[in-house]
Image (cartoon, rainbow, N blue to C red):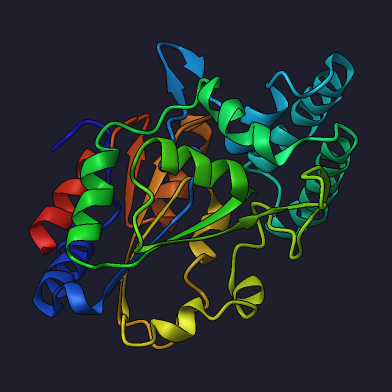
Amino acid sequence: EKATVHMKSPEHVRRVISALRKEGPDKLQVVSDFDMTLSRFGFNGRRCPTSHNILDNSQVISEEGRKKLKDLLHYYYPIEIDPNRTMEEKRPLMVEWWTRAHGLLLQQKILKRDIAKIVEESEVMLRDGVNTFFDQLHQHNIPLFIFSAGVGDILEEVLRQAKVFHPNVNVMSNYMDFDDKGVLRQFKEPLIHTYNKNGSVLEKTDHFQQLSSRTNIILLGDSMGDLSMADGVANVENILTIGFLNDKVDEQRGKYRDAYDIVLEKDETLDVVNGILCYIL
């Protein structure tokens, strides 16, 4: 009944939630994006940083490096969210963006020991209700798989500092590779960007093999690319997709409503997700 909630088919949503409740926590897993899904999109009219932004805006990046990273953002971000371009068109451009951004970060000689401080000094914010969300899943032993095109080392540190990085949380993201002296020397393969978060990347992980009995999924995302995050799961029985529509709301509303079971428009909380989890559990 929240004004921020939109559903194309409330009947379908009701049916899936009932099935999830009936089958219970043992068959459930949650697959979620991180940036602007578990973290906030904005606060008091200001944009909150993504895990890449946390790094880009930090003191360890030179003035020139910061400017170049910002230029990349201003060029590629409109392409990423352009409702008139297909995913096929966007994919090579996203690879280009991530590769160029990572290349710039490599030039900055980032130190592993600085990461905690970088996160601590950032303006990152997690969504309201995030503790309830992580704690409910942890208490009921439900695996949470975070699939992120962000920077894994930064993301994990955000969770650690928020005290929600429980043992049931598994992260797939772009991880840094440091040399013996703790200096960033490269990013580990595979490269994960907004539009390749799918089975092709997950085949390299044993995560989904271990969870073959958990055939019910709640999927949380904020982009069209996030809808394929559960593609690596075999024999999915029931899946409930919840999409956060943060930006260009009027242009993207129709597309999101067609794609996601539940769309949360400009909603900076996890209230709806927590309500559904609470009901299921």
